[in-house]
Length: 257
Image 1 (cartoon, rainbow, N blue to C red):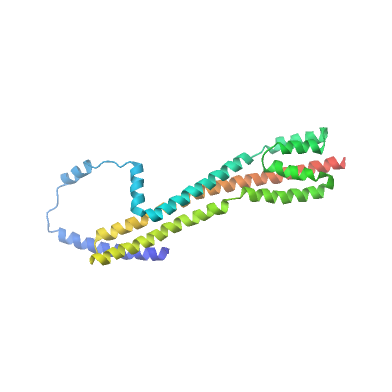
Image 2: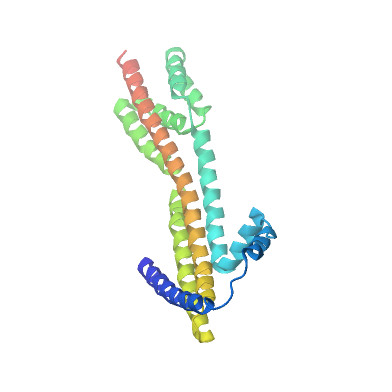
C-alpha cells in the first residue's frame, strides 16, 4: 500500500511539475502584479479558529473515513481510561498489608488474616486471600494457589488491551485506505476533465492525505495510553510476585513454629 501511494504521488508530482513549468513559461511574457497587491491580500486574511480548522479538515478528508477514524479514537480512549482507572484502584501498599497480615497471624491466626485481605481491595489482597484459604493444606498448596490465582489476576488486568491494540492498527490502515481511494478519485477527476491541471492534482492529493494524517495521529495517541497501561501492569505484577514470596515465607515460618 505504501509503495502504491508513493508511486501515485510521484507520478502526480511529475505531471504537476510539468504543468507548472509550462504555466510559468507562458506567464513570463505577461506583466507581473505588483508586490503591494499581495500585501493587501495577506493583510486582509483572517486567522481561522482551531475548531473551525479541524472541522474543515474533517469535511475535506471525507465524512466516511474520518468518522471511522474518530470512532476508533473515541472507543480506544474509553477503553484506555477504563484500564487506567482500574489499575490505579488496584494499587495496594503491599508492605503495610504484609505487616498487618503478620500481626493478624500472631494475634488471631489465619481467620483474622483472611478478614484483613477480604477488606482490602486490589489483586494482591485477593491473591493473599486465596492462599490463606488453603493454609491448612500446607505451604506447597498455598504456593500453587497463589501462582494459579496470580495468572487470573494478570488476565483481569490485561482485559481490553487487545481491543486497544486493534484500534492502534486499524486507525492508520483506514487512513491509508482513504488516501488510496482519494488518489483514485483525483485521477478520475483528471480523466473526466480531459486535462491535467495542477489544481486538480494538488487538491486531490491534499484531500487524500488528510485521512492518513488523522489515522497516524489517532494511532500515536492510543499508543501512548497503551504503553502507560503496560507499565502500570508491569509494576503491579512485580508487586504481586514480591509480596507473594514474602507471604509464603511468612507462612512457612509460622508453620515451622
